[in-house]
Structure formats: structure tokens, C-alpha cells
Image (tube, rainbow, N blue to C red):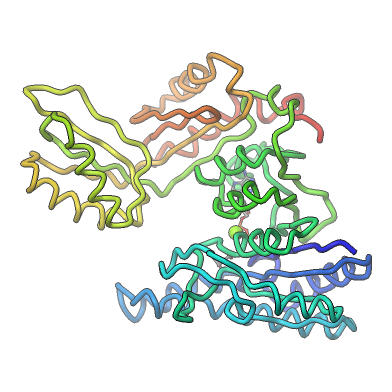
Length: 411
Ligand code: ADP
Ligand code: ASP
Ligand code: MG
């Protein structure tokens, strides 16, 4: 008997009718002779509504209480799904993260899973029941409820699939699979029949919301076979797998846009050994994750250091920079909250030259100015003005012929 983990995102369980639809799908998989762990997100926009509610009370909610609040959305969905399965004659039982021993570190709002106890779920599976688990949540060593960061139900699902050595982890969402670009921004985007863990990890980390990056990391680390597909049809979706040779034939598999970046520049810092270490050590200790870094040519023993951070963290980063400026005697801090990052991703880049030039030409032809560039083995990213991010994404998508069927490899 195979074990399948199925995860249903917010849109898939947005109302009672859709929960019944999900129950029908789960029941069908069960009647095909599979054991099932089902992970569910909060209904529709509920998590956003809870965030909004917290901010109606205070601008700076206590993070423990914030997690306590946000985690409630998932508890509603699991109970309703269990009831819907009961009406179909299925044996199903719902659980919070704490009840099934999803242990995390204590970093509220962005906690990481450290371990999962398997006994309770295993007992239910052995008894022939479908185990339904709240996504997005766990408990720390003191039993405080933690959440795994927005989109964290993906990670709950893949981590459970890894802990139980599941045969398959299906991520059900509101699109048919992973596309060459976000289909909401690029209507010509095409569905990829398959994608490697590394490519999906890059695309997700660079802004493609379709999966939480940490979920893909788990999948890769434990070799979890994953399929991303729609809960509204029977399209097989996109298979996420280890890299296979045929993938290298496609230079660029997809493009991503991150519209939530900010750029900070420390102007006139002393150009001497140890300065960068000092700056980024302090920013890192404030839990701000720095993305791109550029140091400009030095003049009169001074240089400018620019870097990008998530826009949500910009105030915290500026606070740290104020202190650094005083310590180092830097001249000024500049912050630009209106930047976006556009990226092209593909394992095929390794074997091809001229990919960066083609991307820069596409941006030039579109009249988009590049503010920063960074590259790795399988990606090229450019920071551009936020108001041109979407144009930039569409231009690059077109330049690499991603709208054409010939660019696809059939899995
Ligand atoms: P869920 O609530 O099911 O977790 P999300 O809203 O988190 O769903 O993710 C699905 C959304 O991700 C899609 O509606 C789509 O707009 C967006 N998305 C961004 N980039 C991509 C991509 N490359 N392929 C598919 N979907 C993408
Ligand atoms: N409900 C949470 C969120 O909206 C977790 C998830 O949907 O994955 O971020
Ligand atoms: Mg999601």
C-alpha cells in the first residue's frame, strides 16, 4: 500500500463547496488503495485577514501571540475537511501541528522544523484512518505554537512526506503546475511537465510563489518525489525530480519576479580590510537576510556598499545601518524601497555562453535600467526599478522563447 501526502492550499479550501471537492479527491485516492496524510492551509484569504486583524490592534504585535493567532486558520480547515470526509463514509481524524509532534525552533513567524514524531500519525494510518494535519504550524521546545513563514503549509507537507518516506507528495493549488513564469503576470507562460529540485528552488527563492523555498529544500534533501498540480482538474501537473540529462538542453526553464525587495546604500565607508565583515555581521545578527551586495570603486579611501534586503525588513536594516554609520564614520545611508528583482533560471545555463548578454539585451530593448546584477551557476538576477519589474519579466520570458512550445521538454 502506497503512502501519499496531499497538500491543499488556501484557494482549494476557500469555502464549504471546495472543501467537499477536496474531500472527494482525498476519498478517491484512498479508495484506490493508498494510505493518506493530508495537509491543509487556512481557508482562502483567512491568514491575510488574521494579519490585518492583529495590525488593527497594534503596529508591532508580539510575535508569540501573532503565531498563536495566525495558526488558528488551519485548525478550522482540518476540522471541516475531516467532517466532509466523514460524510463520504471515510474514517478521518484531524490534528494540529503540536498534536502530531511537529517540533520547530523558537523563531516565531519564521520557525524551522527540527523534528517530527511519527507515532501518532502512524497509529492512525495503521487503524485505516486518513490523518489530516494543520499546515504552517508547529511547537517549540516549550510548546509555544510557532508558524513556518507565509506559504509554510508546503513545508509541513514535504517535511511529513520525508518523515514518513512517503511514495509521493502532491501539492494541490490553483494553477496546473509550475509555469515558465507566474501566469498571473505573463499570460503566455507555459506549464512545465517536469522541473529539477534546483531549478524550482531557485525560482521559488527568487519570487515564484508557487512553492515555499524551504519545502523544495526538504524535498531535495530527502529525495521526496513531488507533483504540483491543480485541485480543480485532473491535469497531471509538474513533476519535481532530480536533474536528468535532457533538462540541460533547455537554457532557461523559467523566469521569476520578486517585487518585495529594497536597496540600501552605505555611502562613504572606509575602504579597508574588515569593514564588509563588520557591516554584514551586524545586519545578520538582526536576522535580516541580505541578498545581493555590490561594492563600488573606491575614491579617496572611501567606497559605497549597496545591498538588497526583503522590503519587510528594511526598517530593521536601516536601524542597524545607523549604528554602523556612527561606528565607521560613513557619510550617508540611502534606502530605495522601490526596486524589484527579475531572474532567469535554468540548469542548461551551465553549458551555454551568452545567456547574460541575451537577458541584458532584452532589458535594454525594453528600456529597463539594470541597477544590480548577480549570477550563479543556474541563474542570473537583475535589480530594476519596481515600476518596470513586470515589463522586465515579460521581456525576458519572450527573449528566451519561453512562450513557444518548442522550448519544452516532455517528461
Ligand atoms: P496555495 O494557496 O495553493 O499555496 P499560492 O498562491 O501560494 O497557492 O501559489 C500559487 C500561485 O503561485 C499561483 O496562483 C501563481 O499565480 C503563483 N505563481 C508564481 N510563479 C509561478 C510559476 N512559475 N508557476 C506557477 N504559479 C506561479
Ligand atoms: N495559511 C498560511 C499562509 O497563508 C500558510 C499557507 O497557506 O501555506 O501563508
Ligand atoms: Mg502557497
